Structures are given as structure tokens and as C-alpha cells.
Length: 201
Length: 252
Image: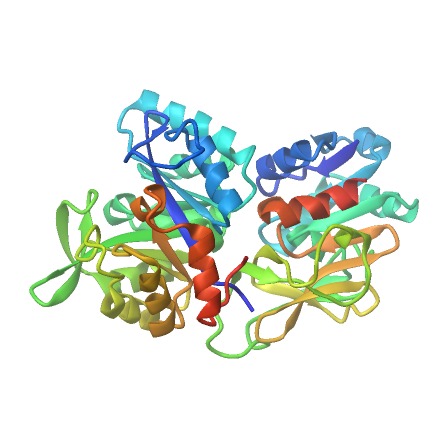
């Protein structure tokens, strides 16, 4: 069973539906026991980093997630959920993340060429940097759907794919049992479903 | 690089797609789910569902349909039509919409944009503007293009982006239905005025019109159309292939 961590941010309807469509058994939950029982965890998220971390802390999920990751359970973060896996973020202030991966979250503003629109919205091709089981069924340059204004940098030891938007932006990460996608696999058509399937297998 | 998007728009009334469609091999041509799946399989980058029902019952039916669409189609879904309050945003987002497009609702109450953007994020709020030339200027029209608001269009769009609209659909009433091509002068002005993605709507009649759009306005993000896709006059796989041959980056 895949537990989709519910901490009160974002819309989980499409994520649930997409997992169902690939035949994965998924449950949206904030229940600590259900999370401990689950085979794999997905940490979703949209919105602001600071707010999300506060919600994780207030609900006790922050410690549970760190503990589960330390025990080796497979975790995948999606969009803001991926950013939360890192050490810290500079989104409206400085916030500490889960610290499961090395790296930090910074704004695109000032770091990509003038004239490029922010947020980075739309379909962009994946450039593989390293083998990852997430891409078992995906080819180089296949497109996935992004919506974000901040990105992860200094994450060399987990970086597995980038997407070009004025510069190479972190698109996916994986190190040991911890993985993440900056894009939305649940909105990325066939390619996205293939990534979810690879994670759930 | 980010790809240019091709977006079919489906008008839904009482749970069915209106404006008859004409596809071989599609048994139920007015089922939003069947059509949505068809377009998604053809390579549409996003789908827009426009609820043109006026009644309360029709609205309920629309959200049921939306839920079904969102449980089977995994590309971005934008929903518009009858969005007047934050509760309307909530209603469609809970059913699987990713973005919500506001038009007359924003004209009546521009603060709706700010309120929705603060609650759901800018990326979720799409301003849809119906624009027509009147006395030598671009004017915003309300109520499905029937009512001249008297407001100048480009400054209206700029104001809405300032309030938090994360994307703009510009529908030219002058070119809509004429099939003579997109309204390049209007779209150029809008692209100059705002930094958020701009989606061109109204006027596409053939593949060439999309090539012209993306060539003449490199900043434009997407082309939207309805009947030419529904009637099979333009097939999306062929459209994308031609765009690629013309060095326009698309998702194949």
C-alpha cells in the first residue's frame, strides 16, 4: 500500500486517481500508524514551503517522515513535496526542511535569464543525469508537466534529471530510498504514469 | 526548452459536449470523458472544459462529469464558466481541476482574482478575456461577448495579472469563428504587457495559423481552439508534426 501523506495542502484527487489507474493501492492519510504500515510513501504538496513545514511539524508528521526514511522506507516527494525533502528553503524567509537530501531551495527570479516567465509552467523535456529507477519506462527528452517558481540547487549527490529553462533546473532526484520529482507525474500523461508505476513497483 | 501548448476547448451543457463533434471511431461524440481521452491520446497538452449550463442542477452534473474526467485523464485540466465566487473555485478544484478560468466573474468583482490567488496560488487562476475592437481600441466584453464593459482590454489584463492571475487566455471576438487566423496585433500587445503565460484563442482555421502564431509571437505560450479540432479540420498529431518541422518546440 502506498500512503499519500495528507497534511492539509494541495489537491490530492488527481494523484489518487493516477495511482489507481496504474493499479497501485493508495490511501490518503495523516494517520501515523497507517503511514508506518505503508510499503511506500508519497509526499505531495503545493503552496509555500514555510507553511507546509509548519503543518508537517504541527501534525507530528515531520518526525514520522524522518523516522520512516531512516528506517529505509521508500519516499517520493512531488513538487513542493520534493523540495521539502531538502535541508532548507529561501522561499519567503529561510526555512528548515526535512533534511533527507543535501541541497537547498532557491527562487528562479534572478537566477534564470530576464524575459523567461516565472513560474516555469508547462511541458518540458527530461535530461537524464544519472540512472534512476524512476525512469525505468521513460526515455531521455520525454516531456513532463512543471509548475514552480523555486528550484533545488546544490543537490549533486541526488540529482538524476534536469529540465532546461534558461539553465538546467533540478527536475528529479533520488538517493537511496528517497526520491522526488519537481514536476507533476500525475499531470504528465503517459510518461508521468510510467514514473509513478516505476516508483510503486 | 518548454514546449508550446495546444489546447482543445470543450463546451459542456447538461453533462454533454455541445457543438456536435465528428470523429470516426468515437462512439459517443458528446461524452466529455470519451472526447477528453481522445484528445489526451492525440497529444493535447491541456484541456479546457467550459461549463455553459445556467441551472444549479446543470452545475452539479458538470462537477460529476469533471470528477470522472479527472479520474481518467492525467494532463492539466482548466475549468471555466460560471465562476463567480471563491466557493466556485473550491467546487471545481475539489473535483480535479488544476486551473480555474474567470471571465465575467472577475469583471463583476476583480478582487475574486486576488482572493483565489492567495488561497490556491497564482498558477491556479486563469484570466479569460473576450476582446473586441471598438472605436479604435481593444475593449473587454462580458457575458460571453455580448456586453461591452467600456474597459480598455490591455490595461484590464495587466490589472488582473497584478491582482494574481497566473495565466491569460485572450479570446478575440473579431477573429473568432472567422477561421482567418489568430488576432496577431492584439496578442502581441498583450504579450508585451504581461509576463505570465498568454494563450491565444479565436480565429484558427488551419494548421498554418498555428505556425504563424508561434512564429510571429515567440512569447506566446499556447494556442487554443474548439470546433476545428472537434470537426477534425485540424488533427492534433499532424498539427504538432508541422509545428516541429517549422522549428517550433512541441511535445510529441
